[in-house]
Length: 440
Image (cartoon, rainbow, N blue to C red; front, side, top):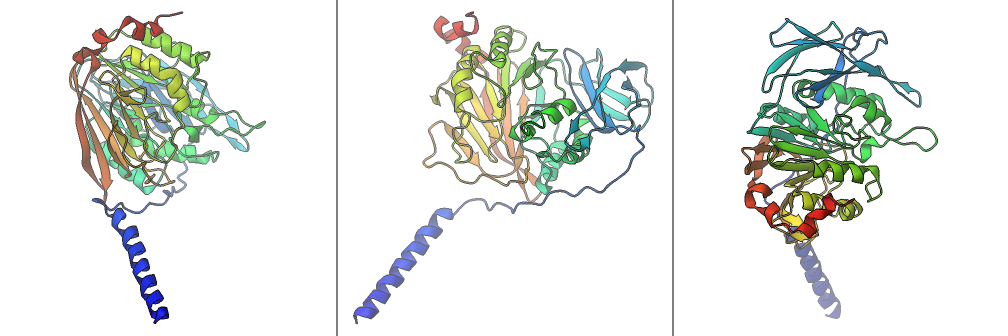
């Protein structure tokens, strides 16, 4: 009898354990399985033909065309014009290359073209031969739209994300770090360049570095050598001394791209540059202020929890004093949107923080969140996808996040965001809170 009682108790306990395990995992959305890395067939090209073409902004009314050739003698010229096949203008650029262990890059060309008209389609050819490309310059006034996707990689989900972005109407792509996931395998930089060329050759891609761009091998290779050589951003045009942080302006928006993996303390060059850059922003000319970097400061996911605390402690006071409206980050392979926050809690005059490191990387999704949800967190979900930011006018912007659901982009989160200028926050900030920008 005692044995039967023990067996019955054990059975009941087992059922209770199974129920306790099964109940909490109930969810409104069943996430699709991870997808494998894309496979790229070897497609030999003539050594002078352009490969991996991408464009970026390069100061007021100018754009930089970047591409790679296998031939070392190919010229760094871009011919361009507003009609197909008719190139009334030509610009001469420069070229570089790099070695990484046993790998030698092709000739990496960077050529700035302009001045260009706003909101205009230009047709161009790189190196004096090869296929014709076309790009569209951003508008000179509102509205202006950004596509946003970080932590891309080269998987089946990456392809799905890029396909969705290709279908949306946008002017600039923002990528807050972790581009190719080459991780020292340099040919993966080449395949990434080919993968994104259809989009990156047609709209400016503005990127910043992530941890997968470091690629430093002590005593053998410098960090960010591949990234800096291939993805040159307008750091000199924005008076920065490093390609790892810079700023640009477009149609009433001042965008600051920061480096999570270079020094950021108060004695660093990046901190000094950021302080000077923010202090010069004219909010009458650019009423919106957007910042992007890799490691999130506001993150309720267990993945990478607390990794941004040091940078946040050093730089958030500058962002708050300047009245930054929106912060876009990656690193955590999931999506999360906050309220207006500052100093770890809700603040109507703080920035909205959005983590969007869910472009399609090979490492999979970060599915474990802190419970209960922090009061500052509004929406969070571990799914692959992309974001779209349409800044409509000087006071209102519309943000949407589109989950990749069985290869269809599903709008899963959306919100209207009011600019801090429009809400009167900068007038309300005291002299004490703003003087950090102007103190020596």
